[in-house]
Length: 538
Image (cartoon, rainbow, N blue to C red; front, side):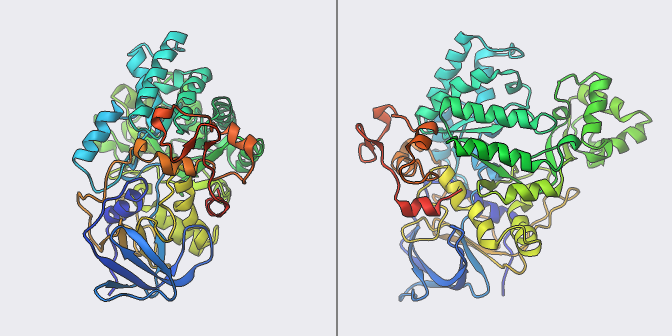
């Protein structure tokens, strides 16, 4: 009898697998038999068996048979996919997106190694974190050259201690006051350590196109790969203009700028209520009135957390204003004065979401987390598989899986994750393609998905349960993964495309941080094989 794994179990698989070093289980072997294998590359599903020995995939194919002593998992009627990699969110797999991160990075990762959780962890250096460390409370201005230099020193410290790159949240309070040149200088430091620049761009609404141009400029000038987090067009004036955004990014990619993005499959975002007002004049009635009109009205703003007035929770701003006998503008201003609130705002359209997902360089990311009051935390991956791939045919099932597996693995330089192949880590998810679906809603965001039957994290399986702390979940500190990172540094470029490689920031690193097996002083990082380049496309 099939069982449905709990959401936390799904998160543990799908999003632990993302970035961990993986621990070695006790000597044992498991053969998953009779399933339809989606190998993560986008290739068609094929009937095959998968044999796991300890924490690695030992063999894949139709003629693979269990050996004496193997545990056998019957996967008939199920899809066997690589573990899903959430590049932005669930259970804080990539900690520190949107500009805020733990600090110091080294101490944080040491604690994760000391007391491993059920998930593997990689961490970004948060731009807002280092900005606040340098500027303290005087951050509502452009930084001086001396301050930028001090921030750069902190970014270098974080990268040396094992961060995966630099993140920014330019729509938020601290990061929003930074000038582009500040981001360029800090991104240059991350690029020297083979990091990426992950950005919540400065505006996802009326000025979204200018914000995308800024992200591209930062990548181009700093020579660093750019990941645009949760790409969206979130106000009425830019609805149905995803095609223009795609053209803008495609033009940058064509001239060698390494730009990718991720998106979640919902038409509503979740953030603080102040994000609604881009000019940050939260007590200005005209500014607030325009902000509410831009998202289609106060009826589209759902309050999901408000410490001062918990009775407002799961009511729209319009409903709160009506109950209090004031205007929605007045209610907004008062909520901000009372400490602010978390909101879910319905302000995107499916046409744009669909077009973004149909781009090969857009991955699936949740921007969610355990306990977050938005259905994306519990439903992102099952929703893409069930609603958008199976039911609405936005994508093929193999392509949807690629966006959750080998594409983010390539983006994060994880050479041994994201595909079902020999010697890869045995991170796998078994789901029923006929029943997989999200069930979380805006009013009940923690409802568990259906159709996920079994998961494996570094060869350890769980069924209908939550993985507890284990050695299979460790901190993915990049200083221990340099060889794999460098071998696949240029996985998104055709062999011989040196101009693209140069523009992406593939410059010589400090030699003390690079293993000699993966780095040649005369030739730079080794290039991956053409086979990997083809499989890891995005």
